[in-house]
Length: 274
Ligand code: HEC
Ligand code: HEC
Ligand code: HEC
Image (cartoon, rainbow, N blue to C red; front, side, top):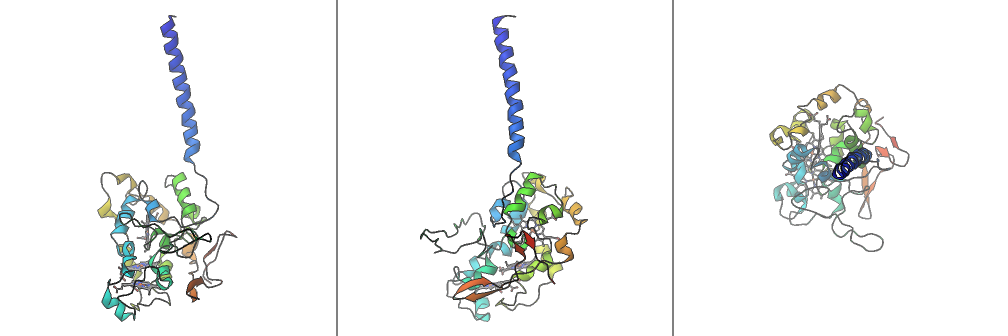
């Protein structure tokens, strides 16, 4: 064998070896570790490769715009009707944030302007007007018991091929009908608009059909049958709804009422409606 031939075969051999090695490392890297606690991560995390049509539909829906309602001058008539001051800035008011943002007063959740940690550092939620996230009623307010950080990793690791029980174990709730009462029929709702017709309302939440395009067609889980497959399974939370947090105000701060949270991340335990 000529010298050049020897060199070429050596280079080829090492290339094949290296590619094989990298593949193995990639496979390992792709399976991410599930965080040890549920935590709110914000709606932007669901956009950008997995649920883009849902995110876009949500941005254009009422739930993607709930923060702006707290600004002065917005929906003045509706505010007067609810005995609220139309000129007041409510964007940092604990009385409003539980139902108009995501995960307020919970791990990873929305923190209004002026929030500081113990060392005095500003920890308020950064708001990007181009990409609504924690500052609105996001995905996690309807889809999770205590934030989506954990079950999001299950979805990624299985490339969307999971059973309801696989994600429910990590705090995904499937009792949609029940979860609207977190806000709409909650006793502390100041708007008194009356009961929500769930069957009618759910169709308006994120109607993805209009938002599927060439770039995201592979994410249409209605069309590819994943939604239908999961619908055959009845999750535990569908049989027996999860509890809905109650809360009150103490010295101007929102405090969750004892014994009403749907999930204890310490005990890794769910609580169902009795
Ligand atoms: C218990 C949950 C809850 C609280 C607390 C809450 N809201 Fe709302 N808000 C809602 C819901 C749900 C809607 C949608 C209307 C409805 O069906 O009640 C809404 C709608 C609104 C609207 C639009 C109303 C319309 O008819 O156009 C405004 C404005 C608003 N909220 C402002 C506020 C302000 C300001 C506060 C705090 C002082 C507040 N909300 C506190 C749940 C809440
Ligand atoms: C106001 C509540 C609400 C919000 C906010 C919300 N969803 Fe949903 N989502 C629902 C309901 C209700 C269904 C079931 C719809 C049905 O049965 O027709 C659903 C269904 C889904 C499904 C299908 C699940 C399956 O496998 O069956 C996906 C995926 C989804 N939502 C993603 C999102 C994403 C991503 C966001 C945020 C960008 C979001 N949702 C925000 C209420 C909500
Ligand atoms: C975290 C609080 C929260 C949860 C949970 C929530 N919503 Fe809402 N929803 C709101 C707020 C705030 C608005 C007001 C948006 C506006 O008026 O622009 C709203 C508006 C709506 C609207 C349009 C306005 C209206 O009153 O008719 C519909 C429909 C709706 N929600 C359906 C649902 C359904 C169905 C669920 C449960 C699957 C749900 N929402 C869960 C807070 C919530």
